Each structure stands twice: as structure tokens, then as C-alpha cells.
Amino acid sequence: MTGTFIFVLDRGFVVVGKAELDPDLAFTWKLSRACTIRHWGTTEGLGQLVQGPLPNTKLDPVVEERIPFRAVLRILTVEAEAWDPVLSGEMHPRTPA
Image 1: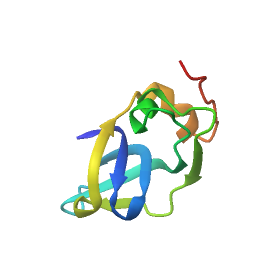
Image 2 (image 1 turned 60 degrees about the vertical axis):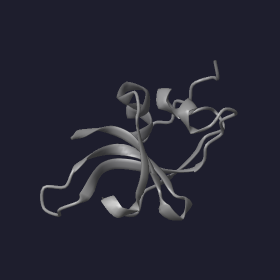
Image 3 (image 1 turned 180 degrees about the horizontal axis):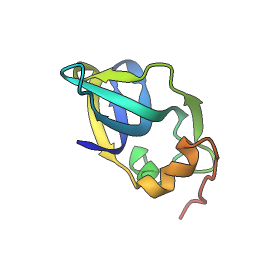
């Protein structure tokens, strides 16, 4: 399984990024490009970020490149093309609908 996802993790962390199942470590996601979502910036919950970050969304670089399955509480599949510029280092927030 490969794609761009939002991972809701234990201890309150939320990460968005390109991920695949790690071929070297069982039960682990491997991140290639990712950011921690420090502040959602939404008015109707995390689901609003599926279509890309909002103007008030605050992102930080991810330190860890792997996520163990046991840390994952929820996975949302996002629109990769909306997140690609952000995950590449260019921030292009969209305006709320």
C-alpha cells in the first residue's frame, strides 16, 4: 500500500505525507516526504484537510521517517496533488470553501 495519507497517531501527533509499507521492517510505515500538522486550522475537523492544507494550517518537518503500526489510530487518504507542493517544500494553502 502506497499513497499520501494523514496519520492520526497516539500521543496527539498528526502527520501527513507520502508513505508506503516498509519493506525492511514488518508492521511499519516508511515516510518519504512528510510534515507534522501542528495546528489543523479547520472549522469542521481533520477531514477538511483531505483536499489540502488551509491558510491557518501550521506544518513542521517530520523528524522520524518510520511509523510503527501500533502508533496509528486512524489513516485518512488525501488528494496527493493538493499536498504535493506542500510536501515538496512549497506552501500553497487553499482558501476555505
